[in-house]
Length: 583
Image (cartoon, rainbow, N blue to C red):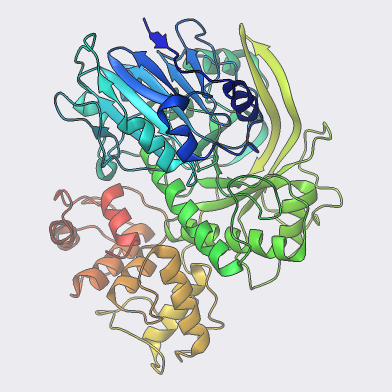
């Protein structure tokens, strides 16, 4: 049972609470004011005590178990969240918030390699990392898992709150199961194939992933077979107590299709507190960073390469500079996703972001997203885009229409506030290079750079083009356009952007695409890509024949050993991830 002590309340607290309730557009109180002792309140749960700003809401989940764990207004939630929460479908934005819950088998499923553990006798972990603007700490001496959400602007405030933590006399130790804290490198692919995959029909999205019981009830009696889930992003408003790799596995094994959504920086011409830069180059870099976080989140949840991840950019009043920033951000987003074999999606209002993207559909200055997910609440369950998008754009099973919003529906006794969606999506993954007449198989992949000529340059040009960085028609001459394409690819992959195609860049380019688990006896295109990439990475010839034999097994083992990976001779997620990042 939780206990709360609210103290040193001041006359200004009511005003601050009112400001906090404004939501995503609220401006947090300055950290210096919030950290002053007289503006603090003490919150105690399960032997864990912290001091938080006096204007933060404190919600006892034992008293209100179905409360929505939302971070668009500052709050502390203590206790075990219910399986089903009363969350509105449309909650956008984040200020700061903390969830303190007991360590159980269920909460342990949320832990990842980024989860910090406090030392014996301590309630703080000063070096805890922030992952997707979330800091998670297992305070085992109090038996609690603490999840703290923030934005770049509120991280210091949240860290100050976490640094105030103490153990009380009521603390009782419960260890976080070691199996509950997965190694990212060893995380299995849990979903039943790429998501949402190939699907035509109705779906819905909700702020928080529904409980297993609710998903089962809706599967039996609702018209929906796809569900949108907010997996990542610095501006994601709702906590996700149900969203784990096991949840993903269960839903996809039961036939549900998932729509993975990231809510990150918003258009610079809005009043949201977290915005992308109005400088296109900076916005592009921010898109790369957002995509990297989304890939990590997807990997942790077992959502594999080949899946589409949708960047949620809410409606904005478009201007030329705002449009350029948004499309630059999406270019970086798309390029980074492609470099790891994911498809890129874009969610926005049909009248703003989607229309802007459509107007530059053929502009090579921007890298086009693979799927559009558009809000046009006209009540029509179809993928017609009216005057917003020409029918010839994103016409190959690349559309999701959010046709109604913020409606409550109930099936099997479970009521959820949802947005209604209609999907026409395909299984297309970033295609392997289509370079007719261009050889990609070499006994060595030596460095090529400005001034280089020959077949290796043609191969590099082809691979860069397939990765979404067009150097022009492969002609075997490494000129300025090829150097620019190489730099863009390197930036999107996190490599040093020197414009030359050396061993690390070759490795990342050659391994692009789907990432199936391969082992002795495997055959096919993915094995060929693996053999090419190993040849580049190891600096020695690996036979490129599409057959995973003893030589390929040894090459995989050598690569794993040299990169500090688990050595098993099997090309799984960790090995593919290392290759595709150019290690």
